[in-house]
Length: 98
Image 1: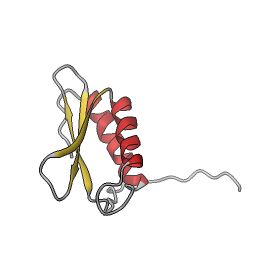
Image 2: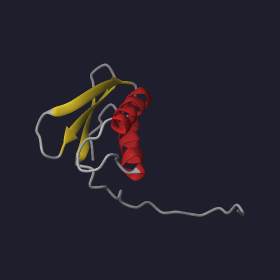
Image 3: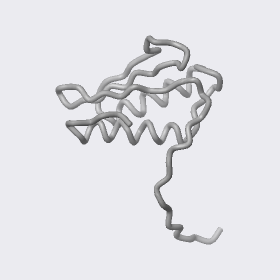
Image 4: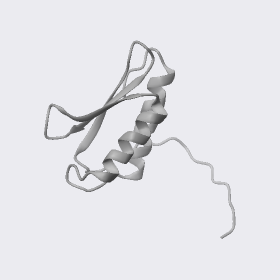
């Protein structure tokens, strides 16, 4: 395979039909919290709190080990988007989830 540099432009995230989503918060002490939610429910399935990096890893690990929703796994793009939002929450004191 020959290396090449590809220039890309920003695009909207393509979400999957995994049946789950996250609600991300920034706490008063600067930590982030992610609530894993089922599309068909109003209570969190599980929540994680800590640094963006720790929450990202714990959440993706949890999803990898537990079948939730309509598919066993979320897409790579969905996982990437969660990580992006967690980092935004950690870095921005006025964070509001997109």
